Length: 398
Image (tube, rainbow, N blue to C red; front, side):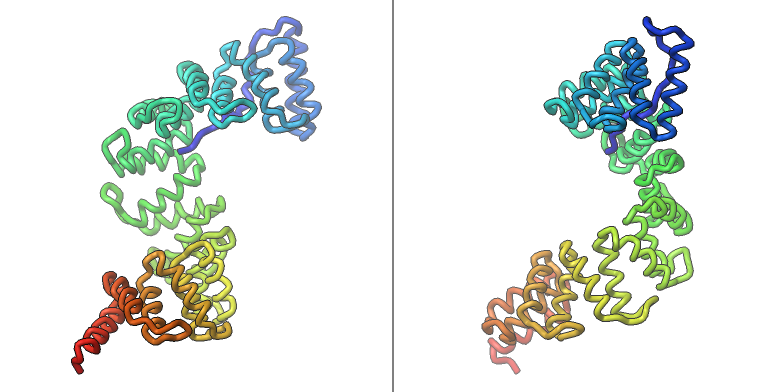
């Protein structure tokens, strides 16, 4: 679930004792102008003058300069000091930020109970970010007993104020049926509210709902594509991968291997293992790209080292058959073993075949039988035939 540092630079009027109203107005204007010009040192200096005069909002804002290291060395401890001064004057946003410092252990010892206390102070005062963050504590069971119902209550309060992360998190609760009866239709409604505000995870989840069409959401590939595209435009690797799937299958769009490749490349360069694997297959088959065994192998290796079982199996095949690489049964067996450890049926069968034939390993019919049996249990027909041959050979049946 998402948490939110309340970063809005609130400029509500508050009394200062050492500055006249005109002086305060001039300082605020100068601070804002300097900030817009990225002259953070001058902006920080102006806000500090206001903060030292006792202005709670200036104290709150000054905390960000120390938190982010803008115009001053980053110093979580100083940020905490200024937020404490602001919170002592009932500044709810500062109290929210103090809660997050204690939750994350930034500038203070991590303390979930203190985090809860500060977040509650802000949440009770109606601060939406604090309400959402308090909900996260209840969801995770940190500083409080885990309570999805309480998480739901606080999220409702924050979401009603338009808090985007709270809207997304409410969608999660309804999607999973946590603290509320599962209701995919309501999940979609909350995801939509968050997605329309630009929440990338909500946009992706909406794409998933429309692509799969669970109960409560009619399947609609066009809407799935539209939401995936919004998330993909923000760099979401999973959305980019799923757009590739739509174009590869021709779901809601004309089948287009070239577009599938484009989307999988965007996802693959971000390290998405499934996209890397699918891109490898395109290069091997020459779909949407000129056939290129070497590029295919490179993408397979990237996916395989991330633990993608089918990529590991395919690499084993390449080394076994010497496709684009020198034939190497030792490497083939190593990759088959990695995939087999994840219960990949084809890898299990191929390991069985290596031990049955004694290719670069001592011939071992018992080991071969074990691997064939594991593959056959997953429905692998070749493994079933191999087991039958072993059985017939042992019984002397022709």
